[in-house]
Length: 289
Length: 256
Image (cartoon, rainbow over all chains, first blue to last red; front, side):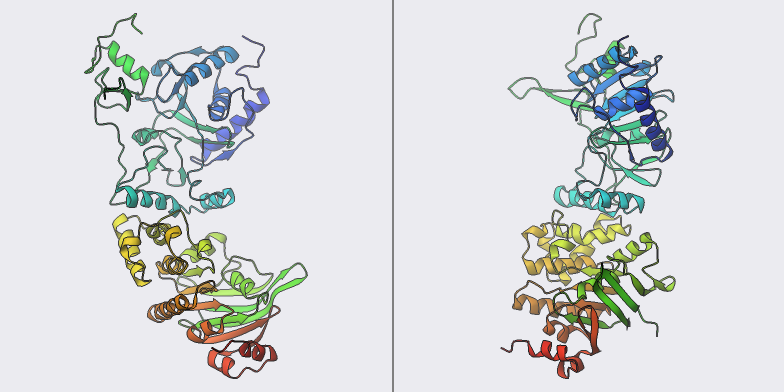
């Protein structure tokens, strides 16, 4: 262990954040203001998520961090190391072994269990922000359930692009009440928001925490004649052959060569271990990496 | 017959200064009331009190709601008042920019009120928007343009379409023709007069332009220093003004 208090934040701060989390869970989708602290990382790198993780971690937890689905990017590696150092918790890259998962821009492909917590990093928690700049007004709109404006955005999408072009941060209505920004996850992940695990959302710069309790109804907004459709690249993963996972497109040379691969690296690796091979993949070997 | 709007001794003070005081009148369905007066006479304060944008310090504003008859809009809860504001009421601002969403297309602007009352069918919303743009003489091919690409007169007509799309019964207008050149004004007035008659709208129009009330208003209220100094039928007040200030106002109009 180090000279830091467990999980970096002092106990009073963690209690304050836990109170906000509990309130958020009691009012699904409602943005609870909290006194966000300065963290040793810049805004936009997950200061909100890190504070929520710090407040829910216990010494027995196993921690996993994903950034755009990947376990091995700078952001994921440094946040994982941060809690390794300040909390001494076990870390993992395997979704099934983790008890707390901090994520940015993705929900793991593998279904989460009731004993798992998913912590999201949120840049702009207010779904109405780009249409209504006034915070006073948006709070009033939430309080009075005046959500017509959210559909104006979708209307604009259809009138300009012929279809709902919003592909990420797709607005949802939680438990028939609050309209919520699910953080910039692809809309492919929206159906997964109804899950067994607890979902916590932390926005550090904007100082808001909100939550979705397990098995809560989460409906993506749409029009009767333009229903919500989760989308993904129309390919199979070139490494593991999965057809049901969200894909990243990778440019591999300057001659138009490209490949599609699972954005969830753990999901892809697990499948390759099981012997699945995609169009451009090679059979999995233990020492390759 | 029940009045659509019953205003009783409304008063609004800004500190010790008077915004408007002791204003009472009844407005009946299908009636258009004009409020004239010079700048600072309390016209806009009065209109904002009636439309629920300002809370008056005294008095009552009773509106004949569809469900429960006459209700005081000042003491009713905020959700109810805001609901009225986007269904039975409409508010046309002097500057179209205040009443429009400038970064949303014309169709989206017209559709917003429909979506606010739970219209969830894109095709229907769009058809309704096209219909309403047509009624205010904006062609269908401009539906996906933003109001920033519209002229001042078009913006004002778009604002009117956006307000009338939910079939309101009472329209508040604050200088609807302000800042428009005379030929555009004339067409706008013509359009408004048609819509008011066709939809049997009641309206309260605040203006300092006597020609506007001559064309549109059935009745007239003249305000000065926050008080109503003369009321009556429009033609009667304009042709035979009794109060010294009204006489001044009427004689100040430039004759071409």
